[in-house]
Length: 458
Ligand SMILES: Cc1cc2nc3c(=O)[nH]c(=O)nc-3n(C[C@H](O)[C@H](O)[C@H](O)COP(=O)(O)OP(=O)(O)OC[C@H]3O[C@@H](n4cnc5c(N)ncnc54)[C@H](O)[C@@H]3O)c2cc1C
Image (spheres, rainbow, N blue to C red):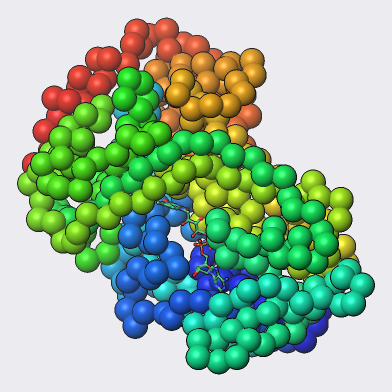
């Protein structure tokens, strides 16, 4: 492996930062991760990652990529922390467009564990590497540069109780998440900020954990309900370590569940299946209700900037954060880590920002189109709906109808949702033929919803 320098700095020790640091450990003598939080002694949610208290699913692609960087990672989460492995197409119930997709065995293997457990295992694995260290309680406030302001040379930071100081490095990566200050830091150095794309969705999450009993949900490991007409309400219930369920529900543009038992159950009862409601109604709650408000999907177009300083990158949610309902963020961070690895391996740090942002943009394009494209079906969400988007949404609707009775189609769709294959795979002649024939047979999804409603899970 080439050595590209003495020191690399990653700002932020969440999933994105940990994966970026893993990649950099192969190319720099020392990698230092600066994190404003302190890490909890056990794997519980922390202040800097408030989403950690809400449902997190790691898509099949995400677990596959993380496994490449940390071999044995999934086994560790299962064996040491009680995470669960499951066939995404067979062990999880998927409801979209108000229909239940037919279950069927697949090779889409996902990993179920709470967000703090996933992050804790990643961090411990990373810190086993001899050339990586983490500084806790360390807030980064800006960038240092050379006199000509062409190169970033370090970060201005402060460790709690200490003075403001500059830490120098050959490469600095901002993985501070959606609230990243990189645009401001760049402006301070005389660079233009990236253009921003936003889609206002006003998603309100309300989440709580419950004791999971083996017979719940007929032994399945989870259920995902993607919001659709008329209410556009989402719901997710996933098995986690320690025999628990994490349940999250919420709608668009301010439509939220109440944070009390009665209100939460009433809201769950409005989903197109009563399955989550029925489990929750009989389950022992294990914690408080937690709320999270997510205003908009947000994409910063760093790849379009004509000027950008050398030795500096932005990574993970700091580039793009998607409607969390689609569960893509951690997987996209993992894919960006792979892209960063290839960029460094191929041409080192030479012209790195341009090459990395171009590769990251290609990665982000697909989940962005999936998330935004689907959100724009909701007539209250504002945004352009070109004819191609309307065609795709129409086609995916037909695919759902056909996939009620066709697990080959469900799996093909879930492969796309799990970012294993690109969306055009759903337009192949073989799939299009099954969609055409299947959708004609299924006269409507309504029968299927009713079947869901009649289903009682004890
Ligand atoms: C409600 C919700 C549910 C989600 N569900 C899923 C899901 O099911 N599946 C999925 O894959 N993704 C999901 N996501 C997205 C996922 O959480 C993120 O994509 C993932 O955490 C990667 O983000 P990140 O590491 O880039 O940033 P973050 O997780 O936001 O972490 C940023 C880190 O930087 C630190 N930091 C910030 N500023 C500074 C500073 N100035 N100095 C030092 N440190 C700093 C923070 O303390 C934090 O540790 C969800 C998100 C939300 C909001």
